[in-house]
Amino acid sequence: MKAVSFISVLLIVASFLYGQPYYLRGVVQDEKGIPLQNVKIIELSTGLVYRTGVYGSFGIVCNNPTDSLSFSLEGYEKQNLVVAAAVYAEIKLKLLPSSSFRMHIEHLTSLTRDLQRDEQKKWFTGEETYASIVENHFINARRFPVTGMSLDIDKASYSNIRRFINFNSIVPPDAVRIEEMLNYFNFDYTKPQGKDIFSVKTTLTSCPWNPGNQLFYINLSARKLDLDSLPPSNLVFLIDVSGSMDMPNRLPLLKSAFNTLVNNLRAKDTVAIVVYGGIVGVMLQPTSGAEKEKIRKAIDELEPGGSTPGESGIRMAYQLARNHFIRNGNNRVILATDGDFNVGSKSEEELDELITRQRETGVYLTCLGVGMGNYKDSKIQILSKRGNGNFAYLDNYREAEKVLLTEFTQTLYAVADNVYMNVEFNPGYIKEYRLIGFDNKMSALKDSLTQVEGGEIGSGNSTQVVFEIVPAEMKSDALQKNLKENELAAINVHYRLPGVLKEDNASFRGGFNFIPFNELDSSFRLSASVIMFGALLRRSTFIKSAGWNDVLLLATQSASRNDVLQQEFVSLVEKAKTLYSKQKKKRRAKESVIPDF
Image (cartoon, rainbow, N blue to C red; front, top):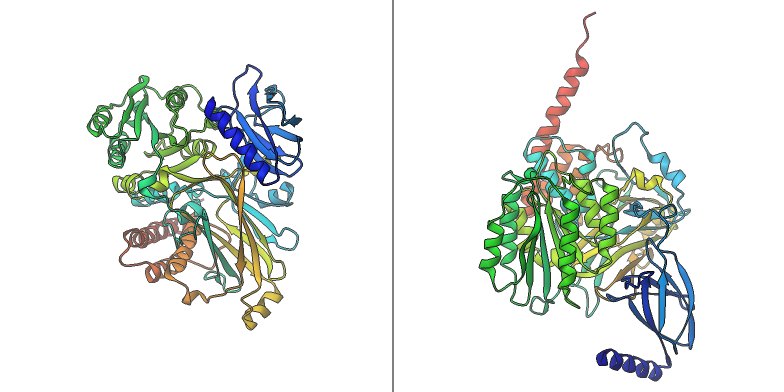
């Protein structure tokens, strides 16, 4: 209590020195007096956004003795109140009645400002389709210059695609998420300058599958955390040990994966293990990372059996993480499952509601998917998106090693939360644009209440956003005159630092720096081949002029001979070409058969 008072005094003194002598403080609770974390607070006089901390408390330095604040949290009635610096405010938020509140609200991956949903519904292929994802279409830049997308480090789609192709199976189109395929390679990482959280690099080039258009690359790179100063971790391994996990590529693979992760643990880190299957229970109480043999023994003793009570396991894991919460530490549940929940919450809507309530605890969630046949990609994706976390698919031990050893800090240490990017195009140079990847579910586009929710970005991660653009006449002139100083787009990255209540943003300029495609760095040309690969797997209507030979040639020419992942990609394209060519021949053979009447 003395420490809190001392900090309050320091804040008041500091604010007085800088001409801001007032300090609004208080706590936000529900009707039962339980503190509410992560309540959004808007200071109405300035528009600045803050959030409550772990114990529901807040403190805001302001210019006036009183100010109007807006308090909102999903599932509760919004309140606008006048708060005085002289009084410690106790705010009570009322839970919305079930008739007026839906905990399950669809979330968009990308959103174009002012573009009406009715207009987007024209993109649908019809109600009879089973496709849940609708490709982004070309958008008029003069009518709708601003578009945005949620950024994260999810990479599950690529390894899942690899699993299908390696088993000589056609890839379901909805399994193809091009933004995750690009994430997989961490293309063109550029270290941020000084204390910056992000660096942004833009590149403009010609489009290899449509020479009349151009590609506009935006590479966002996140700061790398110093390994020696990583905060202590409070990790809870939540492991599915149900009967459906009794296959070599499920529980045995996960046991190897978690044993790999143990190698990176330090004495100041703690690990607990919760399992759900025939039983739901704590198999290992929080244990120091120094006791590696004890942790490995607990992992090795796991055996599959029983039903899949995922809901109970999730609740128990979060409770354990909350009980041992490390302030300013890395508090995270790592859920490993095939996603086949059959006891308790089962539907995506029920899981959405469950994880939404749990995320308010300040505990992150990493999801590791495994298996085939009954693998539930959509359920695990819901959990990771709503749980303020990330998602990877482990199709083999090498992938487990990549995610949990090689990319350890990217996977488990966030440098920013709620990250989303807005791009405002200059209509003088851009006639139309199409965001590649970041496609939305049909159900989300139909729902008028949907919104974009930012994602988690891990240490040292590079995210690539690519647009296909149709140039305006003015841009063609600029290209001929080499007007590199002109601004093609304004880029704003919105985010929150972990444990910090205030939302922040960083602004960047997308210059008119055109480089012919054949002169690009090989990493950009390889990313173009990844886009073409994903488009062919999705049977995209936007890349009709390119075929498997084009993708293979471009991938072969641009992949580094010294990069194992890039060479594996070339091999994957070769396999896909053979697989899909056979399928095409079979369809033609069926179509050519004339029935005998």
